[in-house]
Length: 507
Image 1 (tube, rainbow, N blue to C red):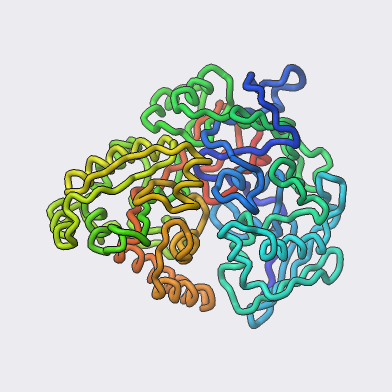
Image 2 (cartoon, rainbow, N blue to C red):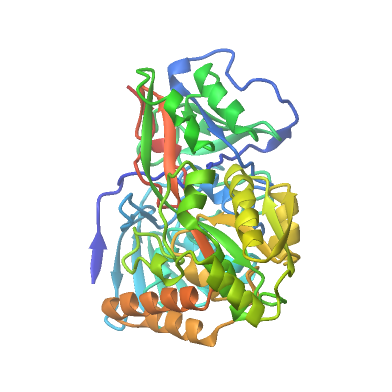
């Protein structure tokens, strides 16, 4: 089986507030980010909400870092188009053996790292092997299936899997597929070195990150010479920044009700689409009361999802019912499994002996989470729960308390990584602490079977999750982007981890 497509496919924007990466120097200035000289037409400023805590996504979890780095500083052998297809990037083509275990990639000639060194198959082999040996985040498991990696020549790479895997090539479009320099991994947290169209310029912590166009880039030269990514914790301040010309793009609107001030205004264009970002009301499945399925089910029945979406996100978004967005081939509308039924919720809670039980809802200080948490608290208390609501600074406090230490009962966070059902619920050590052998069996069967079996088994996995009330899926975040009228290249949907600014231009 051979795969070969044009090198430059449609670029992708990530869901949620996408972040950019900074340079080797991490300054402390919080002054404006506009340049003092140069062609302002070739300067872009994007408004975002969640700043990365580090630039090393090999050791720091969360979507903020790859949303900046992938496609801009780092590239992979393959990437995703806006419709979710896998297409060439640093690989020009690839062949798959009849037993589906051996991939042979032909690589581009002439690509260089920002350090000046040539990118070769040896760097690709190093990067893939390093995921298994040096990465510490949970997503590294995507490379467990890799048995052997061989550089056949400077431009040919062979990857041998231990078993057939439908998922492996797709995962190579994510952060685990990023290509690193063999001599450029000593300071990943502050100085990433990649082959991409941009390099790091400066990181003013707490304020902004800037990217500089890589004028020796091997591929298509991006329009913007300098891209600034400026961070706002307050949604109103983010909107005001666009209205006053401080920024050119709001990557993800954080107050959907505010769109009215931009819609119909000839100075701006508004894009409304969808994302991969499932807003999950997660349960700590390893501790009481959520070890009891009846309590988990009570939560699901207690939530009026339509009312919640209307209240906390202005009715914009999609109700899904499980951990699969409509853009995936195995999507099914499972919202009918747990219709809103407060009486049923109260009955289940009573049967479990947990009426009046107190639970800690610990959410990150992100606008959607804070807004929805108030609605969740109110609806659960109407069903007989007592809810203590804590807001934890994001990313540091939430990542440490909830994600790493699982010191919580419930939380709310948007999982923006594509096809992340297995990552979130297939690993009992993940922060959801969900342990279901039947689910893992379905995931294995989906990965190793035919394409038809993959769809069947992934539907089975999604239904298992939903029926078992492993979590509650509040809604799927919409892609709401607002930009100056002359900014082009913004896609309707956000289906990748990457916020690829190289696709943007000015008309």
